[in-house]
Length: 319
Image (cartoon, rainbow, N blue to C red; front, side):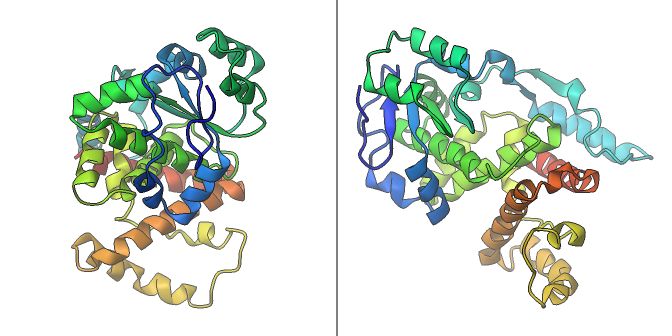
């Protein structure tokens, strides 16, 4: 099948329920901010069936944190008299096989699939002669994969329209594309929590009104690592060692901001300065992008800083 939309490069590689309207509406693109729409213009999207997605994202990745178990873990930590330097110690004991469908519903890949994986994906649909297969075989950069069948199942479970669920998953994966600014630490607990929380924050921020509520209903079926999006606007990360090493000169009023930031954050938490909430979220997103771009995440001190942010995201998201 050829490209199914003229706005983005979307190809059907094996999805049986795809149609032109799922990723072609003007509303879909109007919700995007400038940076997200830029990634949408650059990143090819492939619609795949469940078997193909399982090749690209093996079921072993479905291990996640149960929100209820995270609540118990947080309570035990609060009762402990001696807290160590690792704010996420003990999470591995809570990780279980997560059966929710979302785990392999969407995927962002910063590099093309390995040759053997690419062959296995095409073999799952016998699509070697299609235009989509040719584009897939010739990939040289990032790509996004959406499994329409699983997104449809997820949408029905949350009582959400398929078009909205498709948009939410697309925005989430484009969020990962926006954060693909350098080497990350997704394999760590703190790295996954930060990345998935920010990606969901970007996705939810694309919606307003009842559509935003529907997007959050979808997220309710995700594991704890994905729920910290609710805290992204609450606490601005302002660790000077990190801020001053972002690779660009900070403005001279940096000290003034440092003096008044605690008071501003207090007002934000109490809803007095609600419009500034998005600015706090944008700031945290910028710091994460810059931490990867400048390779600051290799610094153990910076890793601990982000681990404490991840702890806040995790606990707040499971409340």
